[in-house]
Image (tube, rainbow, N blue to C red; front, side, top):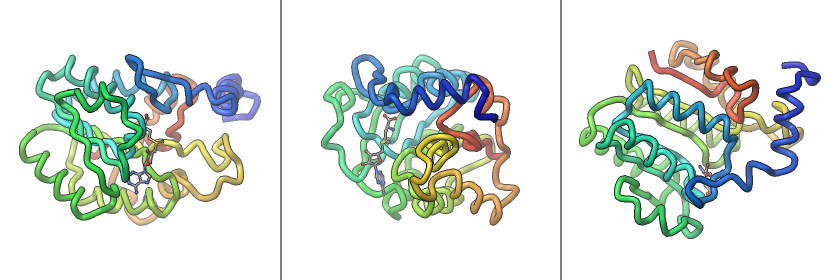
Length: 214
Ligand SMILES: C[S@@+](CC[C@H](N)C(=O)[O-])C[C@H]1O[C@@H](n2cnc3c(N)ncnc32)[C@H](O)[C@@H]1O
């Protein structure tokens, strides 16, 4: 998208003035683009998943969002949210009966095993969202590990590919966009990019990161 496109100017303003740092859902902070959140709500409504799996909890606002919206669509939905620590999580998130917090690295074998178990207990489609350590190698390792648990019909969002100059934070270093480039070189047929969703609201924090498992 051209630098002169009004949506890109809005993206830069939204990011550079840290609007995203002050977003909240039911009083719980979440670090997101609000139009991405609306996009996720539309995806969940179509996908009707049994499970949302999030890497990167931080305050828990996004986990709470996926739980509240997801259970309005499927009352049996469960949310797994993984982080290396949970000391910033708001109490309301701890109290939510559908959210399971697991303290570990998203790429650990233990997390892979928990995903397998939760899939077995909650048959159906899964919405995955990768929002933890945004370095290229970590995101690539997450995607590699997910190959063992993602199934046809699942949806995977890789967040924050907008950093490292795509178009925000130039010079940040290789991040999710570079991880996705490396991943698709290795496994070109693993996912189909949902380009209509990606483009729907003019800008997204997850460029190239709306993926459907065929
Ligand atoms: C951008 S924040 C998550 C924001 C949250 N998903 C939201 O939208 O409100 C990134 C989180 O990833 C966590 N993190 C960093 N490295 C990680 C790893 N190896 N595994 C899991 N989480 C990690 C950090 O501790 C931090 O809380």
